[in-house]
Length: 468
Image (cartoon, rainbow, N blue to C red; front, side, top):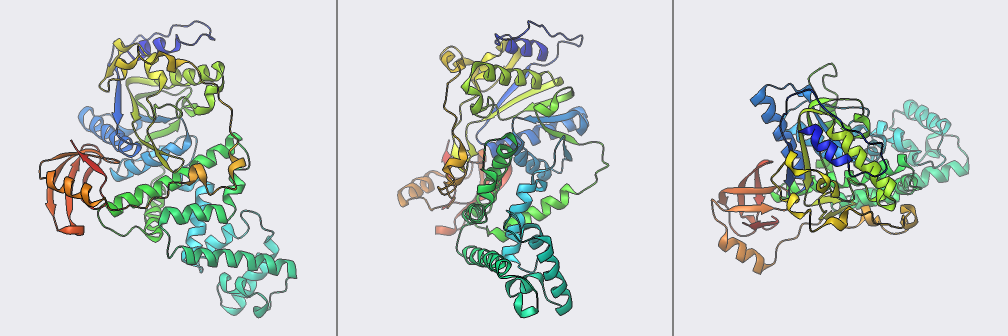
């Protein structure tokens, strides 16, 4: 079934050497196509499916692989797997919070919250490059040791502590200290994600990473955008239940995740996470191909030419043929991208499959006849992102998350209809059933059992849901 599905897909490529892949294995299961309400729910759905197959069929964790189009997508799946205590590894790469650009931003946050954090200071004092070299840092370190002071204390008033530096270096140190001091004031008043987006811009990380659209920088841009998404997810989870959602709280969560990433490196049984490019030549009994949506897979950049679109289709073919026993395709109907909630269409490639080999519970197959024009490449003019760098983090970059209470009319209508046993659809968590209700007025809460993400306590004045 898997091989036949792959063959039906690649047959749509005109620029290929005709081939027909075959397998000597049994007929096997159909390729499974599933839909989630959000990227958040998608990650937890996949983690739940892995847990179920592991328990039901005894498949060890090293027989599972999650394949995605871009590195940044790993973050949500890492979180979902950690929450279920499922061990994992990043094949051909490193975990999300260990990536350089993420560690740089985290180091800035750490220094803002705690100027005595010398590890953080050493990491970012000259990143992006601001002319504060190793010689200067060595002089500051020696003075700190001599006078039993922190690096930050010496850095903010080097001449008072006998550090011999020229006027140009004094100015550079003063500018850096002023930057951190300004951020320390901002963190007191801004929402967590708003603060981090501003930090990325003010520190110069934005200008450094968005300097061009070379693949390495595009990957860094996506990772920075995903960091903002991670903060939005964190705030959503915390504030729905009325808990604190400060940047300090988020930093504590990141520290826990980082500690877990440094766990038993020798453990053999781990779920593998990787990009589809990295999966070439590998095979796994259980494969999950996630993010099957327009502008993600195929990439929006591939729509500029037929050949690029066919290369994306070939990548999808490669992904499907990595599966030996079971293959699951997944897409979400809403996704945080570029700092905003979008409503992506299912990938055009899903409509290229022969649905006699697909177990489709989503209804995508019914759209094939009415959306055939979507299979044609859309020629676009490539937008160079760094040309927008004078605007305030625009694509990554707008949509500051500030949960706001619903209007009185909306609240009264929902309150009147909502009861124990009601089924709701939450913007991030998907479908669930109300288990209990408590509190009054602004403190009214509900406990909901969601299909894929478990039990959540929601503060009604912030909860974004509809009653089914």
